[in-house]
Length: 319
Image 1 (spheres, helix red, strand yellow):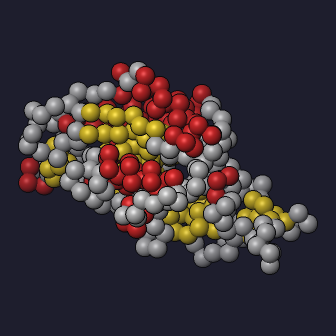
Image 2 (cartoon, rainbow, N blue to C red; image 1 turned 120 degrees about the horizontal axis):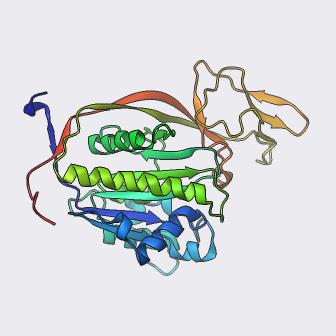
Image 3 (tube, helix red, strand yellow; image 1 turned 135 degrees about the vertical axis):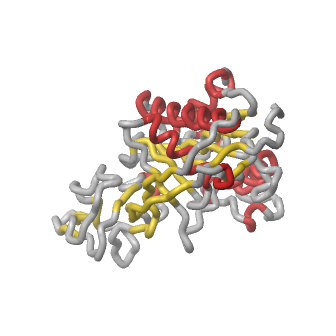
């Protein structure tokens, strides 16, 4: 490997850890509150790491949100919306977060944000990637996956031509979603919290090694790329008339083939998957997605390769 094939990336100096983007997803809430009181375990030489409670009103009420989903409003329209009396709380909060950690898309934005989430789905410790060309984040995910092995750590790629998420973490140059489950809403489980804590630890370790000059050769990871959201079967009144089939329940990341059962009506009718190719469902029966008309998302497996990276020597000695 010649030095000319190495891609120099700026050191990562400012990192935030978001908890409570959804106020009833308690692993991130508990961890961020703990780190705000005692942040020794998240501090690393040469960078600032800021734990931050993103939706304090929703956290106080232990509800997903107050007026609207904070994790969907970081788009230009909402971030540029005039602040009037009846503006939704989460839109105003998004503008505050964008002011502190952004502006989104600018050179002044934070380098990296870990956004901590829980799911009621059986997804394990999942990493969420927003950009398939983000070599730095792909390298970090490769490092985290190896550090956690043999425990599984799937990567969900949410890059899609029409499904636009406008996530809270998208303020940063490198947004990282951490989605850990299954865990009920409004509940904290020690095993789930520990899994999330380990993912953050390994991510921060990677950043420190990168900043200190360690080179990371080309790597390839498997990802599950989001293809389509699938709704529950509904009647003419838009009411759900079938539930997730027992053979699909808890089978996140497992192959789904043509003819496999998807839904079950209360009359006992089985509704099967009709598709030409194997897909890998996830967010199966996620409690928060009933209102979004989403029973699960279909994904396909693919490989992503990141280039050989190292920190540029510019401001290498800056703290």
